[in-house]
Length: 163
Image (cartoon, rainbow, N blue to C red; front, side, top):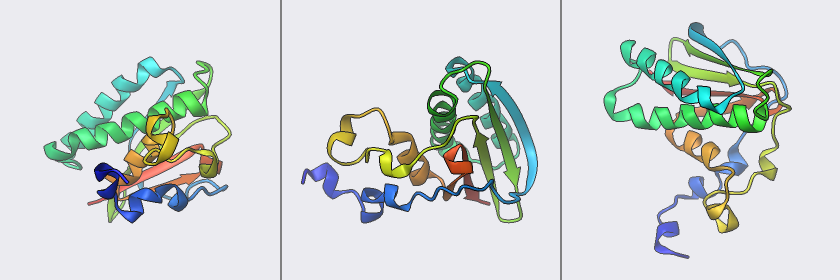
């Protein structure tokens, strides 16, 4: 095992085993405080991430030292929805909302795809997955967010951080 791999925790090595994909829609998440819908176009993702970060900062949901991590999570989740979920079909929409509850703020992102099976995603921290193009976003989200759960067969991600 390489020194870099030695630094991975057991949770990081097996994060794909812990991804939960529910067939049903997400439960009531809290009050929607920011909501947008974009066509499934990768060129529109960065603008939505910038607007969402501006909102999160203005409401003091995130601090400057967390901004890059949250931006990366939003970018990865939205690109997954656009590229893998809606297959970059401009007619399909990606729905984005920020919610607030008593204990957390979070983001729900839904696409019009069929979802995914985590067992079919290569592990991005081991073997061939280290050099692959898939799975890294799921890993980043699970690492930087307090909670990430998938609904609607995987076509909706809910990721949240405690207040």
